[in-house]
Image 1 (cartoon, rainbow, N blue to C red):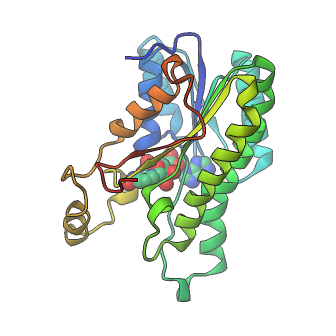
Image 2: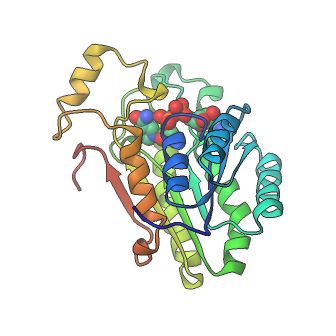
Length: 247
Ligand SMILES: NC(=O)c1ccc[n+]([C@@H]2O[C@H](COP(=O)([O-])OP(=O)(O)OC[C@H]3O[C@@H](n4cnc5c(N)ncnc54)[C@H](O)[C@@H]3O)[C@@H](O)[C@H]2O)c1
């Protein structure tokens, strides 16, 4: 287990699924964790973390609103006085074939998956620059690397995250801040529960390890990238996909 004692972490979209697993893992490693979602459900997770003796607050904000994101970061700074780890995890899908894709399906997916990463990173970076320390971990997707039928909006957003990650990694490297991305494959959460058994069988046939991932598989990789042990890693994309896409 990595030691994140004294660190303050914000995990966006941590009321369930992968974000929830990341929040629990970082808390277990000793970090004070700010949980978050857009509807107030993250308070349940923060309550659990506090019951385990760890510090945690829950924030409510729509990550596609810069006003709400800035207010959330102000609250984190007022509460803890610093922010060391940002995990940009919140995301949605609105799958549709291109011919039928509406402006709203395009815009909402780009706003929640990509613009949010810009808003949250911009809001925390001034504090990390002053601290001369920071760890930013962006949750992309295997789909951002390979593309996928019916997911032109999602794949564009997730590929955009990779360009953003590499650019900001270069910008802030001299100040002790690392910026990396994780590209999960297919992970069992509410986001993937709409898949039919037939689709799951087809997907599993393309995964060398032969099974779908669990939220903890991603959370373990986040804990590593957030740790001191990953200090010399920046601008990278770590695939957590059972070998689905081998570079
Ligand atoms: N599940 C997978 O197979 C998989 C694979 C690759 C990448 N990912 C990515 O991992 C991340 C988490 O996925 P998940 O499967 O846990 O999804 P999920 O749907 O279970 O959880 C998404 C979280 O984001 C929050 N959220 C959604 N829209 C928001 C908004 N506008 N403002 C604030 N919060 C918002 C939700 O409240 C929830 O907490 C996403 O970025 C997703 O794209 C998931």
